[in-house]
Length: 118
Image: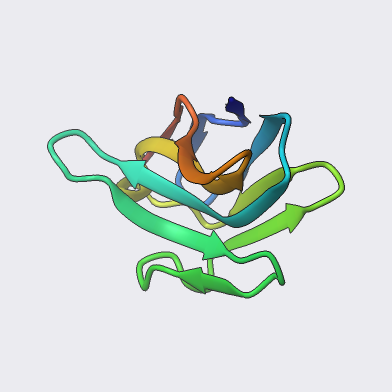
């Protein structure tokens, strides 16, 4: 089994920054695309950003220019640098990764809460 452990959430004021981290543990053969999703109260979970194994990143329009996703393959870790945070960024942020053990499957972290006050 693989386990994703997230960290870095918290309470900040609008305009401030946070960096989320997600480390993958387990007997892993390969990690494919890694991504961050978020879910605000009453809303569906939405994709925030993704990065493939070669480092190609994609972003939701709502975070382009403010958020940066990156990964350290040596550490099996993905990061989300969030700058110029807005109250509408408030949500629980979830890490997701396509991981090859014996077979390839999608794994989720437990979520980390980000609250942005105005």
